[in-house]
Image (cartoon, rainbow, N blue to C red):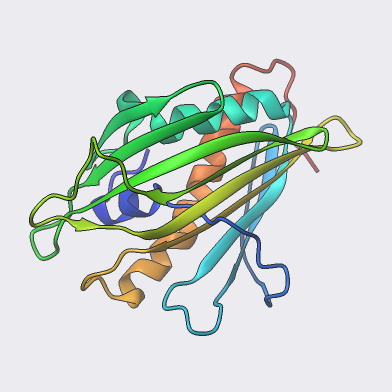
Length: 212
C-alpha cells in the first residue's frame, strides 16, 4: 500500500499521450505471478516535469484490467493513506473524481479533479483521463489545485493470451515541491500502480502464471 503522503500525491496523475518521438530512458523492472513490466522515462523540452511509462504484460483480459484501474483510482474506500476521494460523476464509460492529498506541514495540501473515459481500441481497451474542473469541487483556500495532469492505460490482447499493458503518467504538482524530491518517488509510484492494477485483475482471473 502507498503510505507516504508525497508518494500518494503522485498516484493520482496520468499522461494523456505517449510521446513516441521522445528519447525514452529505461528504468526499473518488476515482475510477479502473472505480470512483468519495465518503467521508462523522458523529459520533453520546456517541461518542468518528467514523463513516465510502464510497459509490460499481464495474464488477465483487458476487461478485468480496465475494471481494476477504475476501482483503484476512483473507489473512495481504496484511497491510499493521506488521500480523500469523492466520486462526482460516474457511468459505464466515464467517471469524475475529486482527490485531496494531505501533505506534511512544510508543504501546502494539493487537490485534483480528474475525468476518466474508457473506449475500445482495436481488440483492446483504453482509459484516458486528465485534470479538469467540476462545479461540485471548487478550489479551496489554502489548497493548491493540480491543473497539469493527464494519463492513459492501454490494454491490447497479445498472441500468447496475455494482455500488453502501457501505463503513461505525468504530474506537475506546482507550488514549492522541488523536482529532486518528486522525481525519485515518481518512478516508484508508476511501478507500484502498475503492480496494484495487475494484482487486482489477477485476483479475478484463475490460472495466472509467472511470465518469462
